[in-house]
Image (cartoon, rainbow, N blue to C red; front, side):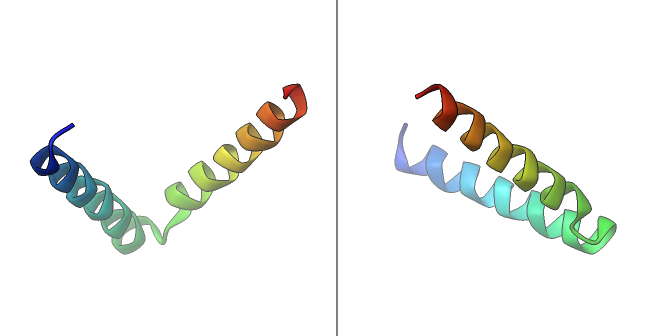
Length: 47
């Protein structure tokens, strides 16, 4: 991955989080964060 692609990808992710905070009160980001933490716990169990 080149630096240009990494910067654009980071900007897109930040823009998506900011738009979620502005339009949805951050509920989608909170949902995804909780699901990600559940995934980490599940993977750690199988480790």
